[in-house]
Image 1 (cartoon, one colour):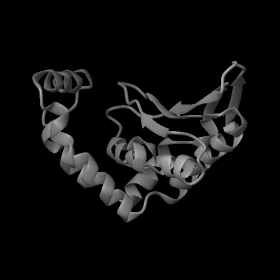
Image 2 (cartoon, rainbow, N blue to C red; image 1 turned 90 degrees about the vertical axis):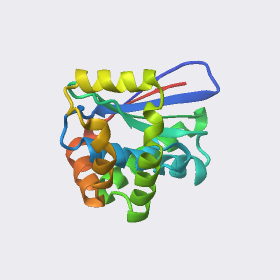
Image 3 (spheres, helix red, strand yellow; image 1 turned 135 degrees about the horizontal axis):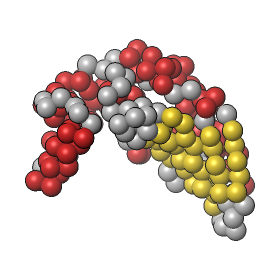
Length: 182
């Protein structure tokens, strides 16, 4: 795990952490996708937001996401915080990730994430342009032609244990590179 700080005259420090993540065809794609929704991909109800913002008031937002590509894309976490809180905010962010890797989500967190992901799924391709973008993505990544039909079932099939195992296999905190600018 490495940290690098870049001095910049500002009131806040921007924090970005990352490591090699996953690809679109990874067998762990769905557990990682659903797990990240819980960890930091669902905005105001994510674990990172809860730990960094709600419990400690260290940032207005905290997030995480996977950028799966044809080959491994990055896993990224980030936040912005007051300069004097940077070290504490980074520690909370990384500790939240490590706890999630070790313990995984709760059944309640998983149920809420599944409901959120599948409940809004049809809105992701409710226009011709959105549908065209999905068809292009399916073709580019050589995904099954029934990808959109099976997406909700694959999300529903994800378990707490599958998320925990996928994060333990694919997200190694020792590889984490953190850059702070402020």
